[in-house]
Length: 389
Ligand code: NDP
Ligand code: MG
Image 1 (cartoon, protein in one colour):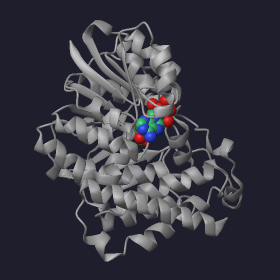
Image 2 (cartoon, rainbow, N blue to C red):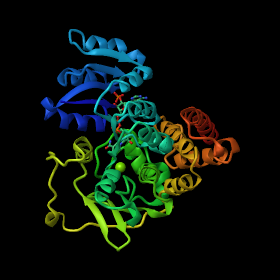
Image 3 (cartoon, rainbow, N blue to C red):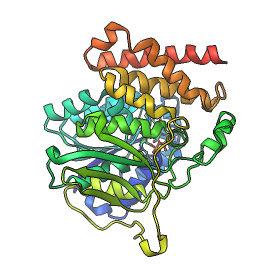
Image 4 (tube, rainbow, N blue to C red):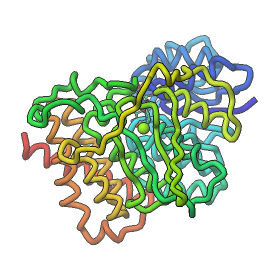
């Protein structure tokens, strides 16, 4: 039996993983499930999957979770430290599917114990890529990509040499506003930004897809994970979300990964890697689909992309600034403090204020430096929001 832990089990990615695991329960020994406010789901899954431990990241949710699991053998804990403690419990495979920078510390902890980490939490790579991958290397642990584009690139690279790779193309649907007139974008509401043309995902990543901050994060994620230079990475608008990424080789070949927009594919690939096993995802009928379309992204519509390029070139702690400012700006948009287009302004201003500070540019990417940068960037982004408001 494979021992597994799921961080962010109650979220969109976590639930897709549980769908796969629940179909083949005898194969798994579920050690820990973690969640947040959705304690009803967490408790139900902990019972159903016979987990040893259920953890909510919110101490104020402890009593409710405890009550929901009373009479069951499931151990209950709460708070960020309890999630880190869960990450220290030996398992063979863990899914990192917490949303936001909060996913970093549990991921690092799991890697310190040699755990194979299936990484959906792109924020940890954007914020602290060298730290995360360095930790994996130091402990002989493997990081597997779960973000669909990165899983697609990873699969296209099987049996290939990185030296032969010329470029990596990640695709983007263009999000909810791909056809809106530019002048209307400023008026986009929370409800409008929270819908996605092709994927069913958590609210935060869905809004990030509308603004293309998600693709911006994925550019940085590509650079960090595959160790390629920023100039080798391209974004291509592909409305149908069938091709998730392509790798271009030095003989002119492009290897494309084609599949339905269903996260259970990328999660399942990481779950069974290095094998491929049958997965319950739709089989594409290409004759029915007929044609696939491609467009260059409009930089004026998606200012987040240029910000990501800047961050990739600056390196150092600018990824931590970028991610924290983006998270704070997104909180601000969700709370109605700022408009849709102001999110990229807040991130740009925070980068302007912080990334040129000498101390930050030359600082090492240690956990302490990353967490302090994250804290300061949220404060600076908050100030930028107040000035706009
Ligand atoms: P969701 O918002 O649906 O789920 C997030 C999960 O994290 C939930 O279990 C939530 O608990 C928990 N959580 C929230 N805040 C904290 C915190 N501070 N500490 C610990 N746990 C917390 O997100 P998604 O599943 O959409 O995304 C998860 C990650 O995967 C993100 O990094 C996202 O970018 C990435 N990703 C997602 C894809 C998708 O299809 N959704 C595709 C590719 C990547 P609760 O809900 O109980 O409060
Ligand atoms: Mg993705």
